Figure 1 (cartoon, rainbow, N blue to C red):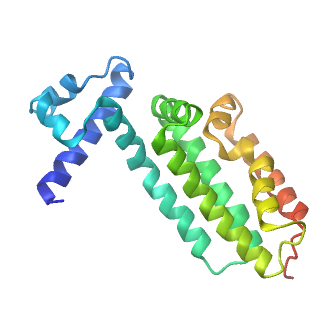
Figure 2: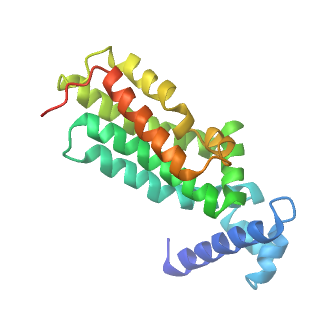
Length: 201
């Protein structure tokens, strides 16, 4: 991809994000975005085949740094029990911050997750992959002892569902962040203990 193409791509993503915030998703159009970008709507379709593809790309652009941060946590040198709490905390706090600062877009993201849209399913799969890596590391190292790798991965998602699923994050919008942070810390610590974590002193 050339620099010119990357610049145009980034410009269209920024304009799409702004239009949704200003007008809402239903009233955002490719024609309107094209006009503000000083190009024809046919030219926009050279970059994004549909309005849905453009919207998905905006959300994907936001999710990419989060996914990179999760990979960094999983690759880190810390014990698996520390990494597990940290990675779930990164998901929870990133989602919550987006909900608070950009509610229109977070609502679109939550809806896409609820409906099983392709990009949302891929994002959830990436989250699962990184959590699974940490659990496997903990099992292999004798740190998680309360079940098999498969059982423990399922337990993490069951126990922390409220804090790592976008729809649940949105449902908790009226609960103050500081209260949810306390709840998350307690549940995450209890989850690690329930996994039979052998914690180094």
